[in-house]
Image (cartoon, rainbow, N blue to C red; front, side, top):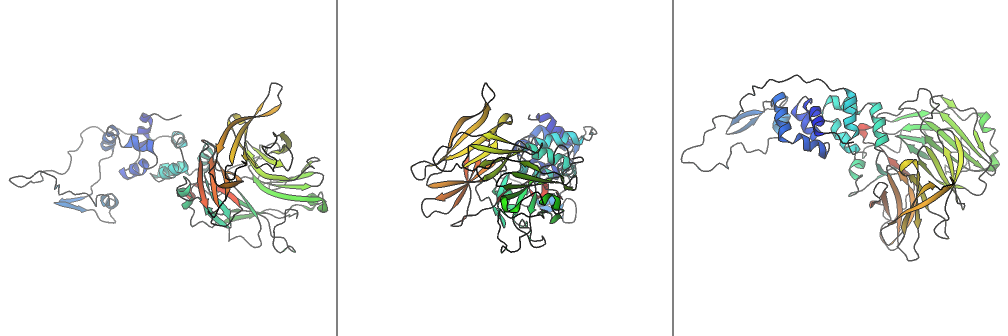
Amino acid sequence: MALPDELLEEIFLRLPAAADLARASAACVSFRRVIAGHPFLRRFRVLHPPPLLGILCWDLTPAQPPHPSAAAAATYADADFSCPFLPPSPGRWCRRDAVAPPNLIHRPALMALPDELLEEIFLRLPAAADLARASTACVSFRRVITGHPFLRRFRTLHPPSLLGILCGGLIPAQPPHPSAAAAATYADADLSCSFMPPPRDRWRHRDGRALFSPALEGIGGDYSPSHLVTEFAVCDPLHRRYLLLPALPDLLVGQVHRPDIVDCEAFLAPPGPDDVGADWSSFRVMYLVRCTAKLLLFVFSTCAGQWLANPVTVDVFRCGAALHRFYAHGCFYWEVFRSNKLLVLDARRIEFSTVDLPPPPGPDVRKMAIVEAGGGRLGMLTISEHPEPGADHLLYAVQSKDVNGRNQWQSKSVIYLPENYRYGIMGVAGGYLLLTGYPEDDMPISYFSLNLQNFQVECFCQTGDKVIFGDLYADLPPSLSPPTL
């Protein structure tokens, strides 16, 4: 719910200086509208008299560093205090006064606002970029905004924006994409985690962390999904920290018959409801091992400080490999290859189940993504490949229940994609679906984002003739990303 202007005025009146007010006005449009209003500025001048900026001797001789007024005086560098626009006079214009008379109105004392009210204000900022600008306004704003409890609430309401693709380093969003400016703030970040001890292999990113496993000996350092690894490390790339996890215990490893392994997949998950003392730094590592006749899931919890004693075992899903992993409403989803089913892992209960899918739109392998829809429901985006080259589009359907409680998918809309490309699905992160566009001609390989709120399709970046494969990176600006380890 939008906050009334009267309440915003009371917040801004408590800023200690005009410089803080100027920075707050740059945070977002609604802040600037209130601050630039004449009634508010009159009130602010009564409570905060303007500082002395310089001496007027025909023009302004400004305060000089290190005086506290020097920075404010510098903003008047282009101002013409000689007033050449005055009409000609038979005589000479003489400056009689340059300072407004002191305001004799009693200045009431202002009561400090509680942090809880400031949090409610900042939660209503529309984007992380606005929040970052507001945090520079004054010390009290920054203290509230950078607090872990507030940032957790903000991330829940405003998922971090998709900034780029992790392929070694960060391949950022490029202008004019809305995420390009935020992605540019990561130009100096070492997201390749070069400070990690060797060896390291593939990694997965979540909530500012990266998950590593060692490169396996005897296979030339090449990644093979069927090799069982027992050691993992979690890294915070921005703050150059890492945590080596305890090795997967022999008792758990012994429950896997290695010749039966089809593939293994490790990924990060949020803490569960049973994780006592969970906070901002808590997480879980889940290691899914798919064998020819069963699935095994091993779970490490930072709250417990160890791998859970008993893996989750499921004796189903023999029909095909699990494809892309998606996360929505607290669950992980995989499409089972050449099967109209989703494999579902409820990350809170650590339970597996399946969801039926409608038949694919064509004879080829389905290209689809699972996303969050309103009301706790699932949404599904599927690429429909048109017989005519370059005319692909997306089909959007939402999960619902019929009168008998059975699962069904309702078609909602058709989303047309830029022409002259064939498309593949890269992944979902930061409120976007990212698509790989393979051109029909000599155009560069392009990546397109679909905004999951308004279904607007925009060019995200281009990589020339090189196809990249990697994880999607979504995060808040570095100034709002506290250490996660």
